Image (cartoon, rainbow, N blue to C red; front, top):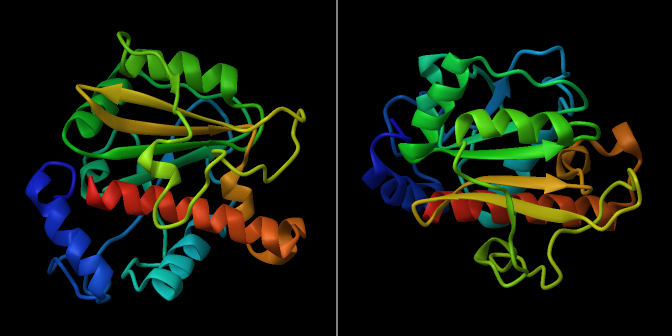
Length: 226
């Protein structure tokens, strides 16, 4: 499994970049699958429905990756969480992690998994509280613009692009770093997920949508090679 077998990350990165299947567990021929986190609390974890599929297609087309465009819904408290190198979490409202949920997510992240939280708008006060259950000892830190996640394969020398206005604040990229490793990336006042959606969903200008997809590709590239 991706999150447990850390050595598989390097092998799978090579496979993703040359379009080969790394594991027999992917009968579609793609090297890796992406997961969407299902959580409790009533928040719309299912929002941005077309986001992950479009991000996968973008990475496959522009970077010759091999990512299954069919997203997989993953229960935060279930064992399937450990089958995915990257988990996407989004929504607008309330988020509730039980103690068991928080423990399972922590084990996943400590084992090599990666969580990307995208504030679709209105999640901030909830997600910060709930992630404290996962890592009580950690604080979200804003990543400097020189961080590698902003530099490859696309350069964002001023950090996250601004996709949707929300409260009109500057976009910020926060991280949780555990034992020297970035285990969670949180995009705030940015809304990358909406930028990945089908063009007609939000009618974003195409240059804006492309920036969102490029930044998403950077996140996956960082996850797969670290």
